[in-house]
Image 1 (cartoon, one colour):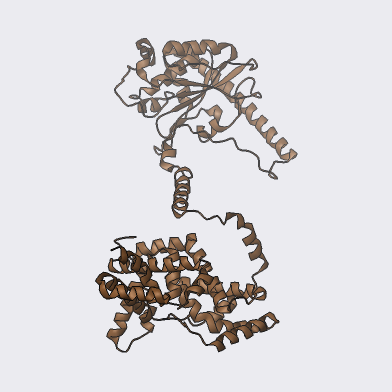
Image 2 (cartoon, each protein chain N blue to C red; image 1 turned 30 degrees about the vertical axis):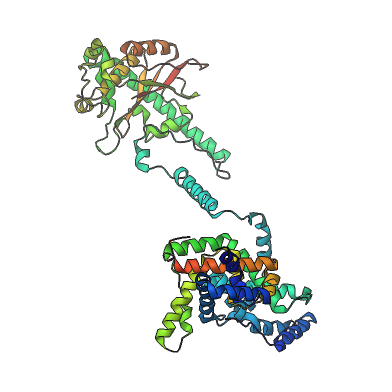
Length: 361
Length: 203
């Protein structure tokens, strides 16, 4: 067996006739007596025969022509391109390259994916970024002056109308205290189309925005119809509870309805007109709105704008109250149990009317 | 042997003459050198890479490298040996490349390890049955060769396909003579084992 191991290593050379005479004689002698080594040699010879029978593969037609095309001088940019990517000619293991490619693909799939627009619709009160003026599209000085004049005229007209309306309200209050709450709704014009977001626009806010989302996105708001209408102040934002259970019972008696915690808090907002009130009889959310209106009337302010978001989840109220009555107003809302704290500070606002945006959620 | 093991000495002289003419500035004679050696180099590349298209690309690369290096060719070895060395090194680099391994992997996934280029049918035997048998034998041999280690495959192909002597193989591959002998013996033993095993049982 030991001889077989030694001879077996020489069989390949024996087959190729690469052994010297002495070794050749040794192998021949062993082969005559060892069947196993004879079979191994037969296998090697059979292998050679298989290789001999294998066809010779010739170069395909057009090989020289394609070679000439390949040897043609490359364009100048090809050399630059090749030079640029020389550092990237790194030999990576195939598994590592595959794993890297999969990781990069996964990163782009899960991070760059756009959000579902249906989800975007359900997000309440998504504020759009403030519009910025594009370069080269800024209005000229004359245009700005013209717009400013028009705005001044509009505001003065609206202020007069507002004063007229306030006078009518006072007269109506004197005539019949019971109809006190119905004065403001009488001024509003509810939207009949149910597909559109329901909102109530007083006459003195004819220039109100089409959607309070856009209004909320504006960084500054011109308070219309007030004594200091020219002051530009960002409205203070207060967030109120819409849960009727948080409100005390006497409050609801004042509002004219009992709380119904089990009912869904959705529906049309507004208690400013008989028609609207009829539509909103069973909506607890309006209780909060009514309480706000009561508090506003109590501190001598007024409701400028009311709108319910399309998703029936949020109500926006824009009110205006005297600067000195802000704390009183907040304490009233707090007493009613609808105010979410903390309450923002007035800061260094000038005396006069204060614009407030109330979000009833 | 399959290849031109014993080339006539006139061929060597003709190669030398053409190389001298090329080095003298007549680069047009390179086409004659290509015409003389393209089939052998292509055949070698085919058996080393195991892929027809890959063999064409590698063979073209070989001749491009030869064209670039011929002005500095010292004529210490025969032109054909020098060309074989370029071919072996180019094939080794190609087999190491990411693109080649990826192609090999995807092909083995696509056709379950069996790989037929279809060109064996060009070489018909005496009868269709013989041709079919020859084709099957060659295909089995090619698949078994592809499963061999790279160095063993190179040595075996140079010996069995190209018919080079041990000394020539050592010159082409850069291995020592004893290494060539031992690698060849092991390559034959491994190939016999792999031919007995069906493809796919051992990779």
